[in-house]
Structure formats: structure tokens, C-alpha cells
Image: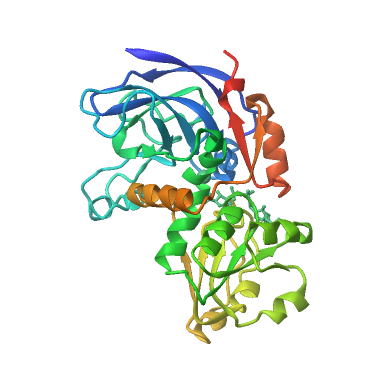
Length: 353
Ligand code: NAP
Ligand code: ZN
């Protein structure tokens, strides 16, 4: 009992994504079947499809910023009905009974690890999970989110499912709010959502960027200003002034230059996961000022729902550039060049059979 599904897959680290057909399970008792309307394009998709991170299983169908329409529900499903608009993010399963899962932090599942929407072990079909660059998906209702934004906003809601929650979760965890000066490093998909969300939380937000040309956009997104990271004078002006830094950069870079911007007791949280390590940060910079470097992984399912509701309440969606499915490789090339304003979203109506 399966449903024929059309997607786009990479077949090897060096091969371009190309049309690929495969079977999805039909919904079990707790499953929700979704026709995918839009899927955002995350830099993690590129890292995975191109084998930049270890462990990619091919064929690889990326995509974990999914919004679609529910087409069927299993007999035990209570939260969704046919016709609902639903979202799926980076996870489609976890063990469900460890301390992290019990605490609503399924992304930190301590026994099996979370099941990724793609490139995870598929517990039902066997093999590995295949993601949202496809026209249809079936997901346990515990990992499906309710989307209440207006129908016209749905393409711009898709990126909230990864870029939104990955920035919202650390901003909440480190209690960002009014009276604080916060930096967002890297103005890409994650970074632009970080600016919007931190500003909506009431913080004074500054973007730290390699791209001076993004200054007007940064201000439009809600930042007080943009600091060019390669300009030592601009960086020096802000030394010792930030309460919190959220670093979204997808490439190795000098962390010390950023640590000098933190106040005493400040934290820089890394969410970017470059393929190669950063140059080692200076211990002295951490010790003199009791500063911290931390990391953060997406966010739990209940927190993802909270983030969607927060964004709805504050009128926040992503700034997107819609692409056709067959434009994905061009989108990846532009992403590598930091030329994304500020999230590509695939219109799944352009998926050809
Ligand atoms: P993106 O749209 O490509 O944005 C990354 C930004 O980083 C670029 O736009 C650029 O901004 C900056 N940048 C790129 N190369 C740089 C360099 N060499 N030095 C300094 N800055 C550079 O990527 P994304 O989708 O936001 O993802 C960002 C990273 O987060 C990726 O590594 C991704 O895998 C990771 N990620 C992590 C999680 C998690 O749970 N922790 C979730 C999703 C994604 P400027 O032009 O402003 O400099
Ligand atoms: Zn992502």
C-alpha cells in the first residue's frame, strides 16, 4: 500500500539534483498525508545533497521546510482533518520516551536521535527518509504543525519550519528581549528570520555581515544597523557591547573577532554548521569576560508550534524568492555565493511527473 511520489534527488555527491520517482507509505493509523504546496531551500539541503557533511545516503531528496494540504488522515489522528493546511519541519520522528522527548526537545532525542525528514532511517518503509522536494509526504501527526497564516502567505511560511525555529529557539532559550543588544551574524535564510524574530522580541538588533550591500535590507528587516565584519574599524566601534550573538554563518570564519564584541557574561550561539571546522577560538577571550560559545539545534515540536503562532501574531513570514523545481541547482549556486534574498522556496506546482 504505497503512493507514487514525484521528487528531485541527488544520486551522488557530485551529481546535480534530477527528477526521481519513489513510493511513500499510505497513511497508518497515526499518520497525516500531505500534498506539498511549497518547500523552502535550506543551506543544510545543499550541505547534505552535495555530501559536504558525512553520512549522506543516496538517492537524497532534500527539503525540510514543508507546507501543504492534508489529503488523508489515519483513524487515530485527532489534530488534523482533510483540507487543513499543515507544516513539516526538520524532524518526522524520535524515540518519544527519553528525557529530551519527554521535555518537548525531540531534536535532542537521547536514544535513537531524531528521525530527520530526509537522510534519517525510515522506520516504516526501510531505507532512509526522503524529504520535501517532492509532491507528497506522509508524517506521524506528532511531527506535523498547524499553519494558520493566510492562504496567500503560505509560500513565505514554509521557511519558518527550519529557518524560523532554528533562530527562535536560541533567542528564547537565552531570553532575548527588550533592553538587550543582539547581533545576528550572516544575513541569509536563517539570519533574516533571526533579525525579524529578535526585533519582534523587543531587542536592539544589529546584523554582522560580509556583504555591505545588505545594509538597507537589514534595516528593512528590523535591524538598527549592519556592521561589516571585514571592516576592523566598524567592528571596533561595537567592542564589548553585545549581550548575545546568534551566528548563522555556513562557512568557517574567525570566531575571535565576534567574541570581542560580547559584553562580560555574553554568549555567542552557533547554529551554522560549516563543512570544515572554524579556526580555534582564543581561550583568553572567553576567560577574560566569562564569555560563552554555545550551539543550538532547530527546536522541539511544541516550540515550533509556539514559533508559528508567534510569527502569525507579529505578522512575520520569510522574504522569499519563488523558484521552479528545475531551478534548484541555480538556487544552490547562488546560495554558495551568499546571494539569497532571503530564502528560495520551491513552488511544488512546477514539479513535473
Ligand atoms: P544561507 O542562506 O546560505 O546564509 C548563510 C549566510 O552566511 C550567508 O548569506 C552570508 O551572509 C554568510 N556567509 C556565507 N559565507 C560566509 C563566510 N565565508 N564568512 C562569513 N559569512 C559567510 O544559509 P542558511 O540556510 O541560513 O544556513 C546557515 C547555516 O545554518 C548552514 O550551515 C546550515 O546548515 C545551518 N543550519 C543549522 C541548523 C541548526 O539547527 N543548527 C538549522 C538549519 C540550518 P552575509 O552575506 O550576511 O555575510
Ligand atoms: Zn534547514
